[in-house]
Length: 436
Image 1 (cartoon, rainbow, N blue to C red):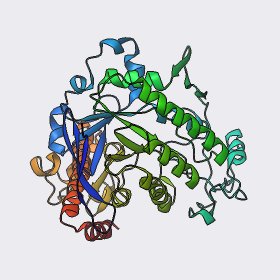
Image 2 (tube, rainbow, N blue to C red):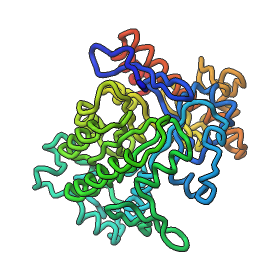
Image 3 (tube, one colour):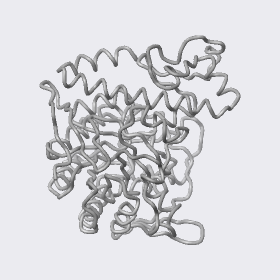
Image 4 (cartoon, rainbow, N blue to C red):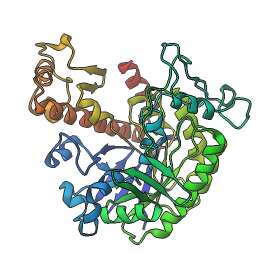
């Protein structure tokens, strides 16, 4: 069965428009993937999701496993639980290997600000913590030609940043799998169990188990980790029992060109129905924008053109345009939902914080011409939305979230249209100029 079809390719870039086919419907690509971590898109009732132009939702395997562990074998499935009959995707649980492990130990979330080559600074007067010292020890040595340096095409980040305080590392990685330290002991997750969980959850697209590395891991550790990710990829394929689900293999390799190419070449040759490129990049996350571009330029050429490509954890406007331009088909990110709950509103003229005093009493619509539920049907003004946030009314998060999700999905619809009309480059330039 053919799961994916490229319908139109841009003549000047690697951008492409296609159709991703699943048992629960088709996804027109390129497409934004909305995050529904715990089998729900926060603040948005299921019956309103289709009105946000949402095509595909991704749920979190690890968190659902922790919630459903004893009831997993009798679980009704994500589609029924979410009351969503459209396409669904689950991750592997691999990101929690990082977020509960090295990321937690060094105070680095998904939006981590420290990357290879960045120096840790105590210029703020804060004393060095044990985590800082460990980070310094693991920072790449620029004398090693295989490690990240300015000569490799990735610039160093400013040296006036430092790692925040550390917390206890709750992960123990071994070659066979991962132990999560939980109350009362340890919980083991490996490739076979990850696939079993995802099969029971029943998403249309599942992901092979992998180990994302930290930006602070050096070349030697990243190479060692990559061997695990590749071994786990093969075990994930061998563990599958369902053929009505697509499985994506994950390309890792940190910010190292040789490892990214090695991983893309290896994963691209395996019998996956699609591929995901792992890592947290992008200027908004503290890394130079060029780093994400480099990783995609290294990886995409090794991935089969006829199969879909997903970029994990990327979702700001400039990053979306860059990813599409370099041949990516889908990307997931918490930006539309998480930022909405804190008052950040995305529009075609940039982002603004509706909670600011400047919007008190404003009669201006959230976004002129927007047809989302908040703007088109309820005709909420910026002043009204600000007041709801001020009163901590739950309607505030709901209205902001449906607007942001609609905005990003509508943007991707416009991007698809520009690819079909052979105007993608012009559309990108104009849109980014408007939000600058």
